[in-house]
Length: 459
Image (cartoon, rainbow, N blue to C red):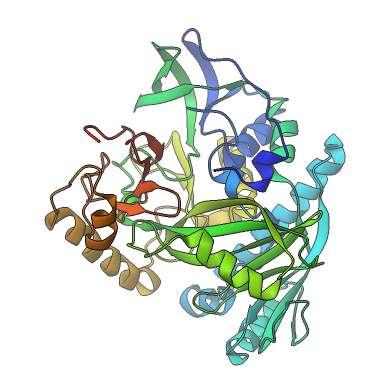
């Protein structure tokens, strides 16, 4: 599976770890959040190293839509209602700051990554009233939002909230330029974190890294305890096509309706996505074929240049977890739960974590503290997720190897190596997906993404 980003950018290779080392800050994860955190600490006087188990930029960063925006769906009215105006303002200000920092870095480093200013639209084909409430809330928080009924979309809408002065870019070309200035080790898999020590397997050998601060920026934390992030979020999967010869769009579009679509242009390509569902949920048919069926009705002359899927970590209270991993591990930090807005989420995480490590005031990032208690907004999703997990843990079905058709129809599957949930077969990507926490495996059982850390056996 290749995205339009992996097809249009060759990433550099970085060395493996050959011996134990000692650094001030160890960043685990070579995606956008990890690389940006290391970059912002680069000139602080601290020694920083990034450790990536595969190759940098090959995880969620490679499969994003790469929108840099403070428009995050229907969120601001809900934040004001659940947390109050001050917390909501913190969230909004952090996202706007993230957009500015991307622009500043790209300008200062002279990075060629197709950065374009574009308006971002949140649209609905059925309900304009909820969009008007969202626009009023966003404006009250100082965001550049306005309500409109005019869009470039090839179908009518009930209304849209337009966010001006947002941006889009090529994420891997940006990541390549920034990472080239850092100390990065690839094929360096973290086996264990104990205190300030990290056991890393690289080149078939085990090495120990000592670090004053450790940042886990692996999209979804692979450490279960303490923190218990697997109880506080789930993962969702969505499908994307890069369409050649479709009508170009000057703006970026995201639908707030169930089953809605996302759009943005990149050069001569239009990125079109949707059909999102919880990872591991039995989903009949091929998601790409179904998406292509919808695309042909809108763009009959278009051709598919690339197709890919992407997973998003979805916190129950809709706010990322950025800060200390737990109250018992003050030297350990986490960045996860960016929902579908990983680019601004990654920069926000890098800004918050670098400030915290350097001892700066981080009160303006309090809304992201992982130790928060959000009973009002998180209890319902928590109970729903807990129920689904219990079903897949307690009602496991026997797995019949190679009977994939029956697996799709009946829910048979092997057992996930994370916490033992029954996996479901995804016919679109030909993968085994975990309905509890989102781990993914190839047909033959090789681990693709965590939080699981081991491949399947006996497939």
